Image (cartoon, helix red, strand yellow):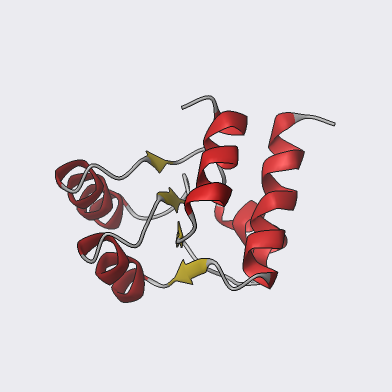
Amino acid sequence: MQNKQKLLNLLGLARRAGKLVTGEDMVLGSIRNSKASLVFFANDGGASSMKKFTDKTTSYNVPFTTALTRQELADATGLARTVIAVADRGFAKKMREYLEI
């Protein structure tokens, strides 16, 4: 199985386990409160929002990726979101391995 498919499967598992934070305001809050271990931003999302999350994750030292599209995030999680944070260090560590970051 390819790493991308493994990543998508793991995102779905994290969703079912209740370890994802979704929506811009909630994700920003989780970054500020040091609860986010990894942030996914859809690579087809808006440029101004992407800059906001890039700046925020950089200043709080949270890993950030744009490896997936909005549709891939939606298919994996069942949620139509542009930004998703992983709030579990174990899930985030394995996802970073698949992303090679």
